[in-house]
Length: 163
Image (cartoon, rainbow, N blue to C red; front, side, top):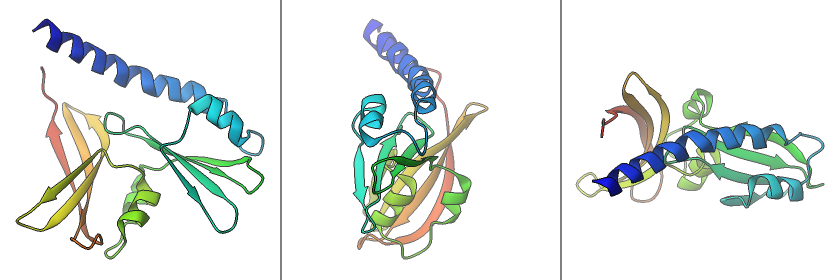
Protein backbone atom coordinates (compact mmCIF):
# COMPACT_ATOMS: atom_id res chain seq x y z
CA UNK A 1 0.00 0.00 0.00
CA UNK A 2 2.81 2.41 0.90
CA UNK A 3 4.66 1.50 -2.29
CA UNK A 4 1.55 2.28 -4.35
CA UNK A 5 1.11 5.62 -2.54
CA UNK A 6 4.75 6.56 -3.13
CA UNK A 7 4.50 5.66 -6.83
CA UNK A 8 1.36 7.78 -7.12
CA UNK A 9 3.01 10.73 -5.38
CA UNK A 10 6.15 10.43 -7.49
CA UNK A 11 4.14 10.23 -10.74
CA UNK A 12 2.10 13.27 -9.75
CA UNK A 13 5.19 15.23 -8.80
CA UNK A 14 6.92 14.30 -12.06
CA UNK A 15 3.87 15.34 -14.09
CA UNK A 16 3.80 18.69 -12.27
CA UNK A 17 7.55 19.38 -12.47
CA UNK A 18 8.24 18.50 -16.13
CA UNK A 19 6.01 21.25 -17.58
CA UNK A 20 7.51 23.75 -15.13
CA UNK A 21 11.03 22.76 -16.21
CA UNK A 22 10.00 23.06 -19.86
CA UNK A 23 8.64 26.56 -19.41
CA UNK A 24 11.87 27.70 -17.73
CA UNK A 25 14.09 25.92 -20.26
CA UNK A 26 12.12 27.01 -23.33
CA UNK A 27 12.40 30.66 -22.25
CA UNK A 28 16.18 30.29 -22.59
CA UNK A 29 15.89 29.28 -26.27
CA UNK A 30 15.87 32.27 -28.61
CA UNK A 31 15.12 31.73 -32.33
CA UNK A 32 17.82 33.35 -34.42
CA UNK A 33 20.35 33.26 -31.56
CA UNK A 34 20.47 29.95 -29.67
CA UNK A 35 22.80 27.29 -31.11
CA UNK A 36 22.20 23.57 -31.44
CA UNK A 37 24.85 22.94 -28.79
CA UNK A 38 23.14 25.33 -26.38
CA UNK A 39 19.76 23.63 -26.93
CA UNK A 40 21.40 20.28 -26.16
CA UNK A 41 22.75 21.74 -22.90
CA UNK A 42 19.37 23.25 -21.99
CA UNK A 43 16.97 20.48 -23.07
CA UNK A 44 19.21 17.42 -23.20
CA UNK A 45 19.46 15.05 -26.14
CA UNK A 46 16.44 14.90 -28.46
CA UNK A 47 14.35 11.75 -28.66
CA UNK A 48 14.43 11.91 -32.44
CA UNK A 49 16.41 13.95 -34.96
CA UNK A 50 15.33 14.57 -38.54
CA UNK A 51 17.80 15.82 -41.15
CA UNK A 52 16.31 17.43 -44.26
CA UNK A 53 17.86 17.75 -47.72
CA UNK A 54 18.03 21.54 -47.40
CA UNK A 55 20.39 21.27 -44.41
CA UNK A 56 17.76 21.96 -41.75
CA UNK A 57 17.43 19.74 -38.69
CA UNK A 58 14.46 19.12 -36.39
CA UNK A 59 14.80 17.79 -32.87
CA UNK A 60 11.85 16.19 -31.08
CA UNK A 61 11.17 16.50 -27.35
CA UNK A 62 8.01 14.52 -26.53
CA UNK A 63 6.35 14.89 -23.15
CA UNK A 64 4.05 11.93 -23.62
CA UNK A 65 2.59 9.75 -22.18
CA UNK A 66 2.04 11.94 -19.11
CA UNK A 67 2.15 15.35 -20.76
CA UNK A 68 -0.14 17.05 -23.24
CA UNK A 69 2.64 18.65 -25.29
CA UNK A 70 5.31 17.54 -27.72
CA UNK A 71 7.97 20.01 -28.83
CA UNK A 72 9.85 20.25 -32.11
CA UNK A 73 12.85 22.55 -32.37
CA UNK A 74 13.87 23.51 -35.91
CA UNK A 75 17.47 24.50 -36.76
CA UNK A 76 18.75 26.11 -39.93
CA UNK A 77 21.79 24.82 -41.82
CA UNK A 78 23.82 27.21 -39.63
CA UNK A 79 22.79 25.16 -36.54
CA UNK A 80 20.89 28.13 -35.08
CA UNK A 81 17.30 27.73 -33.79
CA UNK A 82 14.70 28.84 -36.29
CA UNK A 83 11.57 27.89 -34.36
CA UNK A 84 10.29 26.11 -31.25
CA UNK A 85 6.89 24.50 -31.81
CA UNK A 86 4.35 22.78 -29.55
CA UNK A 87 2.95 20.35 -32.11
CA UNK A 88 -0.05 18.79 -30.36
CA UNK A 89 -2.48 21.37 -31.73
CA UNK A 90 -5.92 21.27 -33.30
CA UNK A 91 -4.36 22.61 -36.51
CA UNK A 92 -1.92 19.67 -36.70
CA UNK A 93 -4.65 17.16 -35.83
CA UNK A 94 -6.69 18.59 -38.73
CA UNK A 95 -3.73 18.03 -41.08
CA UNK A 96 -3.83 14.25 -40.60
CA UNK A 97 -5.08 12.73 -43.87
CA UNK A 98 -6.05 9.27 -45.01
CA UNK A 99 -3.09 7.53 -46.66
CA UNK A 100 -0.36 9.31 -44.69
CA UNK A 101 2.45 7.07 -43.41
CA UNK A 102 3.56 6.45 -39.84
CA UNK A 103 6.71 8.50 -40.52
CA UNK A 104 4.63 11.45 -41.75
CA UNK A 105 2.44 11.29 -38.64
CA UNK A 106 5.49 11.04 -36.39
CA UNK A 107 6.95 14.17 -38.03
CA UNK A 108 3.62 15.98 -37.64
CA UNK A 109 2.63 14.97 -34.08
CA UNK A 110 5.74 13.49 -32.50
CA UNK A 111 5.98 10.37 -30.40
CA UNK A 112 2.55 9.02 -29.42
CA UNK A 113 1.59 8.46 -25.82
CA UNK A 114 0.50 4.89 -26.57
CA UNK A 115 0.53 2.41 -29.45
CA UNK A 116 -2.09 -0.34 -29.67
CA UNK A 117 -2.79 -3.18 -32.09
CA UNK A 118 -6.31 -4.55 -32.59
CA UNK A 119 -5.94 -7.95 -34.22
CA UNK A 120 -9.61 -8.41 -35.17
CA UNK A 121 -9.64 -5.10 -37.05
CA UNK A 122 -6.02 -5.55 -38.18
CA UNK A 123 -5.47 -1.97 -37.10
CA UNK A 124 -2.72 -0.10 -35.28
CA UNK A 125 -3.78 2.94 -33.23
CA UNK A 126 -1.53 5.66 -31.88
CA UNK A 127 -2.86 8.17 -29.38
CA UNK A 128 -1.83 11.51 -27.90
CA UNK A 129 -3.21 13.02 -24.70
CA UNK A 130 -4.73 16.39 -25.62
CA UNK A 131 -6.21 17.75 -22.39
CA UNK A 132 -7.38 16.94 -18.90
CA UNK A 133 -10.53 18.58 -17.65
CA UNK A 134 -13.53 17.87 -15.46
CA UNK A 135 -12.14 14.50 -14.35
CA UNK A 136 -11.45 13.22 -17.89
CA UNK A 137 -8.35 12.74 -20.02
CA UNK A 138 -8.96 13.42 -23.73
CA UNK A 139 -7.07 11.67 -26.54
CA UNK A 140 -6.60 12.17 -30.28
CA UNK A 141 -6.16 8.83 -32.10
CA UNK A 142 -4.71 7.94 -35.49
CA UNK A 143 -5.70 4.56 -36.95
CA UNK A 144 -3.31 2.77 -39.36
CA UNK A 145 -3.86 -0.28 -41.55
CA UNK A 146 -1.31 -3.09 -41.46
CA UNK A 147 0.75 -1.43 -44.20
CA UNK A 148 1.22 1.62 -41.95
CA UNK A 149 -1.10 4.07 -43.69
CA UNK A 150 -3.71 6.24 -42.00
CA UNK A 151 -7.27 4.99 -42.46
CA UNK A 152 -9.00 7.39 -40.07
CA UNK A 153 -8.76 9.46 -36.88
CA UNK A 154 -10.91 9.52 -33.77
CA UNK A 155 -11.09 11.08 -30.32
CA UNK A 156 -12.02 9.63 -26.97
CA UNK A 157 -11.91 10.45 -23.29
CA UNK A 158 -11.23 8.38 -20.21
CA UNK A 159 -12.31 9.11 -16.65
CA UNK A 160 -9.35 9.90 -14.41
CA UNK A 161 -9.23 7.35 -11.61
CA UNK A 162 -9.06 8.53 -8.06
CA UNK A 163 -6.56 6.03 -6.84
